[in-house]
Image (cartoon, rainbow, N blue to C red):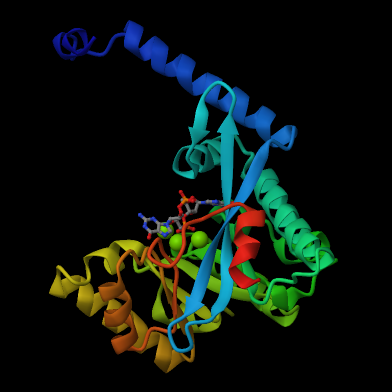
Length: 274
Ligand code: C2E
Ligand code: MG
Ligand code: MG
Ligand code: MG
C-alpha cells in the first residue's frame, strides 16, 4: 500500500484516497448520529489549588465511544464537528450534560465543592447571543458553579464581540478562563478587556519547562503577567511532581494534569471528594 502511494506522487485518485474519503464520511455520519442520539459522554478531570492542595474544580471533556470505530479522540471529532457545522449543537449538549451532572451529584447528597468548566469552541463565539443561550441552558444551576474555557485563538476571531459576551457572562456570575494560553496571539490590551479571571497555561510549555529555559521563561512570564492583571493561573498537562514544584515556585495558582488525576467518568470522579 505504501509502495503504491510513493510511486504515485502525481495527484490522481487512488484506492487509498477512496479509503480515506470513505473513512472520513463514515466518521462524519457516525458522529452526527452519536450527537443526535445522545451517545456522547463527559469525562471529568480535577483541578487543584497549588496553595492549599484542595480540589477547586474540574474540566468536563467530551468523549465518544463508537460501536464500530471504538474510542475516537476529541482531537479528531471536535474539528469534524466544526467542519460539519455541528459544534454549536455539541457545545449545547456538553453544557447541558455538565449541568445535569452537577444536579445529579447534588441529588445524590454529594454536591460538587468546586467549579465545573466546559470548553466553548471558537465558532460558538460567532453567535452574538451566546451569553443568553448559555444562561438559558444553565438556568437550573448556580452560575458560580460553572466556568467557561475559551481558547485564546477563539477569543481573537471577533474580539469586540468577545468582550461583550465575556462581560455579560461575568455579570451573570460565570467564571471564565482563557484556554491554551500562549499558543494564540491575544493582544495585551484585549486581555484586560475580556472578562476572564483565569489563564490556562498551555501544556506544551508546562511539559517542556524543566528541559528548556525558553519554555520556563514563557511560563514565568505568563504567571507574572496574570498576577499583574489580577488573574489566576492554571497550568495544564502537569505530569510530574517536579513540574508542580517549579510552577508553585513561580506563583502559579492551580494545576490540572495526569500527575494529579486523569479525566474519569462522573461516578468515579465523585469519589474524589467523598
Ligand atoms: P483542552 O481544553 O486544552 O483540554 C485538555 C486536554 O489535555 C484534554 O485532552 C486532557 O485529557 C488532556 N490532558 C490533561 N492532562 C494531561 C496531561 O497531564 N498530559 C497530557 N498529555 N494530556 C493531558 P482531550 O480530552 O483529548 O481533549 C482535547 C481537546 O479537545 C481539549 O483541549 C479541547 O480543546 C477539546 N475538547 C474536549 N472536549 C471538548 C468539548 O466538550 N467542547 C469543545 N469545544 N472542545 C472540547
Ligand atoms: Mg479546556
Ligand atoms: Mg487547554
Ligand atoms: Mg490544550
